[in-house]
Length: 277
Image 1: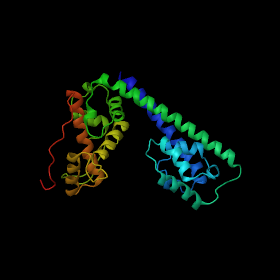
Image 2: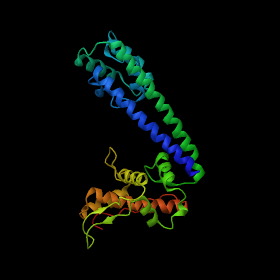
Image 3: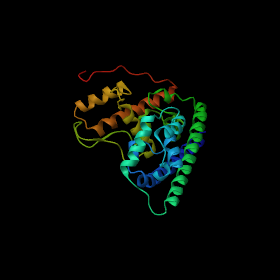
Image 4: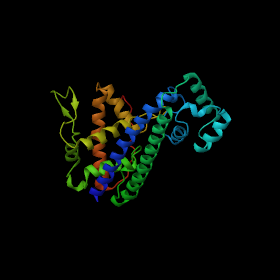
């Protein structure tokens, strides 16, 4: 069962690498034809953007197109997330960029269209493997996705590397396996706390990335996980560097992960302690 999950996780990672590579290639094509494209499409691979690149791979195909006509086309594609104002921004940016037509532009346009189709293919494949992971996870009876910010993908990555939690007698053994047991390189408890260079690097990376997510702030300035954010701030106040504090958070996450997998309990937000406590 764990082997099958690891294969799904590996397939997703491979698909993601190809997806990113293709988006980078698409960017190389689009930024020549539309130097200012990030003014109207922040993410080159969003559905509305892909539709636009497929139908208008270069500005020459926009000639004679009015704002109203472009809006009538793009707003339904975006499920009403796009606006007439954004369409005006596209046409204004095209005008400001000037003539970007190059030699053999029709062939260049076909390259862009082909890349769009490739990106769309990988998006669909990622959606399928994400669904397969989501459908497969209930077999494990795992509760890790009750931690705020922990997705099915992250749960799958953790389970595929940890395997059966019963093979670890305690959280310290799991931490050592992950290479997250902090190692102090000085005496009297002072100095640098660093992660071990040994252990499962994929598991270590997943936990460390999760630690970063735990202290992230929303656009409104609210922490995703108030307990971890408060702990992080306390460590900084005690003189720890940001990487050191994240290592300590990673170690706490290992203990939480171990307890939840061992006892099949749901996550409970700890009481938040203030920095001066």
